[in-house]
Amino acid sequence: MNIILLGPPGSGKGTYARMLNAKYGFTVIGTGVILRSEIEKGTKLGKESEEFMKIGKLFPDELMAKIVAKKIDSIRNRKGLIFDGYPRTIKQAEFLDEYLESKEMKIDLVCDVLVPEKVAVERISGRWSCPKCGFIYHVKYIKPKTLGICDKCNKGLTQRADEKPGIVKKRFQEYHRLTEPLKEYYTTLGILKEVDGIGTPEEVFKRIVGLVDSIQKEKQ
Ligand code: AP5
Ligand code: MG
Image (cartoon, rainbow, N blue to C red):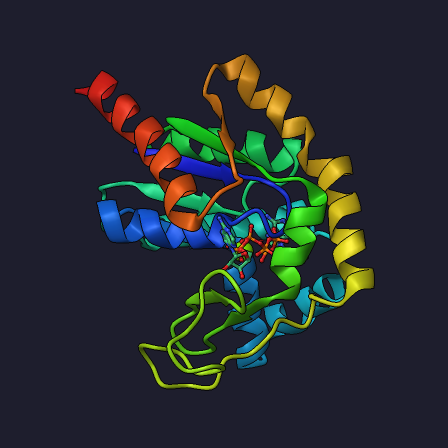
């Protein structure tokens, strides 16, 4: 069962990817998470990607393809994959289809999480994450037990470098220009399902689970 989480910045892709992992044991491939970890480690890839991330632009397709292929190859757990933030361009989608086909795999479901820009911006502005386990909190909606501290790791929570309003605006522009055309791409393939992203995280997740379960049933 391989799933793509599609949706604008702040729609909850990272949040639902984690919840899907906890419920079904599917492995998450989060390209933003991978790039941020390379930046943190100070690698060459991290330095290159930081140049794009800090201005809200997408990292080049060819480089992203290499990262994703390597990640897919490294995964031994065959239960399923969750793509969080990949693909983001038609070229990336075509590459992913071809690559998965070469491994006799395919995408079963694309969840398009629908959230108005205003709501997504508010969610991004209140987001704090754990630098150790990556758990995503929100000051109002997903609060840690102690303000500013991760419930699991006891580490101080941090905000991302690309949360500044000007960069968020650019990330939305990139989303509309380059990622939204994927909706038509996956609609044509018959695997796109829209999910209302308004509601509590649990309510939205329940909608996603409904889709995953019905597709799992079809596959049996
Ligand atoms: P990436 O890290 O993927 O960022 P993004 O797509 O902009 O999305 P976000 O991570 O900001 O939001 P999200 O949808 O994951 O929401 P979250 O769960 O955090 O990419 C960053 C950059 O990396 C890109 O700009 C680009 O430069 C580069 N990059 C990455 N992938 C790339 C690719 N494929 N190609 C090229 N470049 C790439 O939720 C947001 C907040 O809302 C949280 O605080 C959460 O707790 C809260 N929340 C979640 N659900 C709810 C709810 N139902 N109600 C209330 N609050 C909620
Ligand atoms: Mg994310």
